[in-house]
Image (cartoon, rainbow over all chains, first blue to last red; front, top):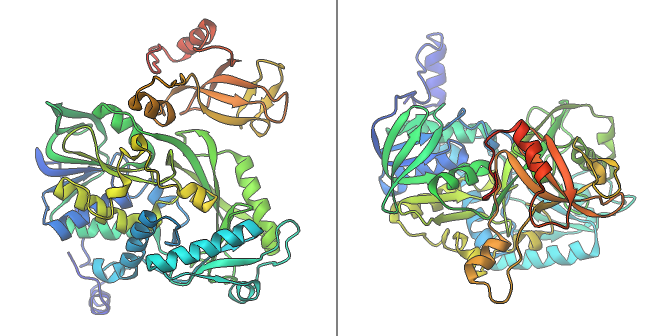
Length: 415
Length: 109
């Protein structure tokens, strides 16, 4: 692997950029690997990366039916934050956020992490009380957040209208060290690092069956033939239910569409991320100048990667109330992703009823921000065969035992 | 945009008139049920890629709950039927078979 640096750019400038080489390989699958990860999105690639880096397991293949990072990793609104109420969520999202801070240096790949700060607006008395409580919880969890008043909100985000027609801004939960990152680069950076460790990132390779013998996994059938393995990690977001069905168990998951859209690029108008959860929309400005807009998930089971127009209309209508200048913008692109929603809206990182099969799914509408922490916890679970401290609370059997991580109630919103 | 005909009032309703209500034909578990059965009732879902039976409410119309058979990949609606039944009626199943031969959902086909 060529190391990227200022010297490398200077060197390549002198020879017409002919010496860069491929960032990751395009190998033929082997007959057998120690571990196979299904899904080369952010979570799958991060799992493989930490399997190699933290646990020395490097005979690993990452199988992807489409292309690298072409699912939800390339379809989200790139927000990174860790201001959750429940302890297990705060722990894993804060782990992820802290890993994001140094990820560019660690991977030698610029993921453009921008700790620009995230504010979650409080627009009702109920929200004010909720976020005051979250700020206290975060202080106990070691996550730096604070509750700020309307004046400070306006200073941080001048384009905001504090006295909205329906919901005035009464304050906000502010996490200064939260922010955004370049989503594709996260997948590409991890893929390059995995490839460099000798792992195989195999694209256009769809898993069609999971082979089992006596309750233990022995390998997978794929569109490119049979591949054997000792351990199998399923990290496929919206299609988790399909793979679980192949492995012979059911999941507490429903797949629905979540949409996002971006405006035409404009000059810099806001340098923070704002989430308005009462009216349900969130907004940031990309480095290209586009306003990146997200809203709530559609309500019905859907595998089409496109959602209903009226949800977008609701989101934009809500944001225009709080950011009147948005009303003049043309929207440029609009897309959807298939998100896997669990019963308590918190993820699953777990062993499964099939020995050797591990599951990482259920990130719902908030997976991107968790990628490094999720990969870290999943790799630990796969390497040890038992969940570590970060993953333990996110086990699959919590639904049977009633140990919910009730973040949907805590956040009052899909997160 | 989805369009479904409400089996009660007969209105061809658009999606904005309707509220989704999740998977249909979940059998309630009573006090004698096992933990596993209760867990399955509350949380385990079919979530199929293809034919799905689900509950909807004609929220901005007559207000009635009804059932729909729908494809989660094409968003095609095969038919709607009243909620007072524990399984899809024969004519709905035939309508699906005409368009998706070999379909399955739980132990139905």
